[in-house]
Image 1 (cartoon, rainbow, N blue to C red):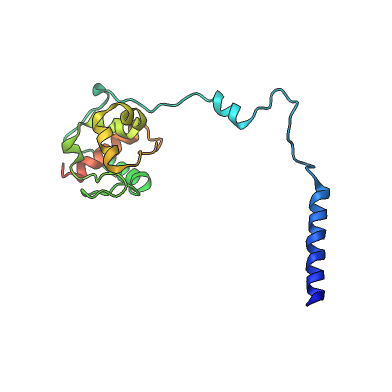
Image 2: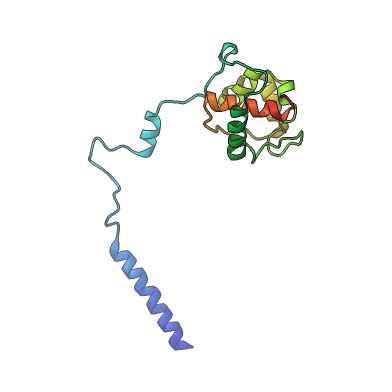
Length: 161
């Protein structure tokens, strides 16, 4: 028993000595290269991205539905939306999508998809949803075209043909 304790202590002591002798070799703590910047400086130099604002004239709604848009919208839903939104009226993390196209204008829906932060900051209806859900919808980096596809999928979900 005593031999095991001495062996273990020796191994630990040896490991500590080895670690201490390595010091900070290979660890760069300061640079003299003027072109090198810290991650914080890089982040500060990045342009701010504020969502894509959709305006009334930007959308063309067709009847009947465009099946290619519905199919593409369904794929995006399954990849980026399904984790938080159900297709019925039940709230999961975010509100359910049932009848959303009957309650909201297409421009509002697409702005909520592409310009979420601005909507949660300034739109009273979006703020009410935030109060109900208690979670901010994250930016999904969805383009205007992808938002249009999701809208078409929502229209089909609400029974439009």
